[in-house]
Length: 221
Image (cartoon, rainbow, N blue to C red; front, top):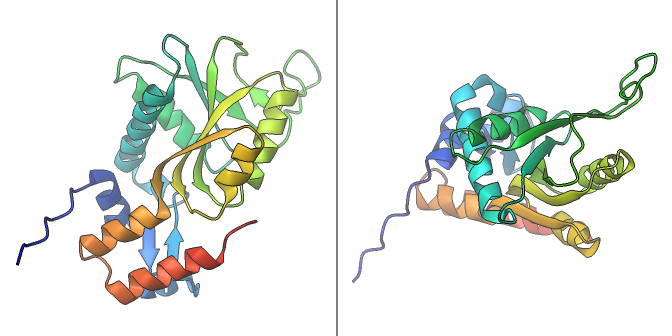
């Protein structure tokens, strides 16, 4: 009988688990009183762990380097307010890679200044048509916030080259956006997370299967 090789360890996924950013089963109920078999919190808890936020920014910046058109300057914008810190961490981390990425900020509401070029703008940052813009978010579910963000940026004179999320929940949002002509990428797919935490003995088979079934039933068509 051949022994199964242990899974290759992923330091970022290990950190997500240890810091309670991804929870399963009873841990979800204990922490949030929610009856869902899987919960991903890359928002409030992530910002309590700046080393992990920095590591996530580095992983995203490296993914952008893989996706970028050679020679094109790059820029990241986070979907407000969830991914604004993640996008900023990505831009900051990119300076460690030798391929710096510019940063821009999208507001939920336009700035309320008396006038001027930025007086009623939802976007803060330079507009450079040469840049490829990557829209950053924590998860992909229905894709609605991405649609709103893309439309808002287009109205401000910016074109989004791609959407990059940390986790694709595999609920169909990526397919909706891609049907509209927007390329969608992710660091992880939720099925991969479930497989990884089961393979590393963080969760048992029934817990993993419950999470898989939960994801399967919650697709957006």
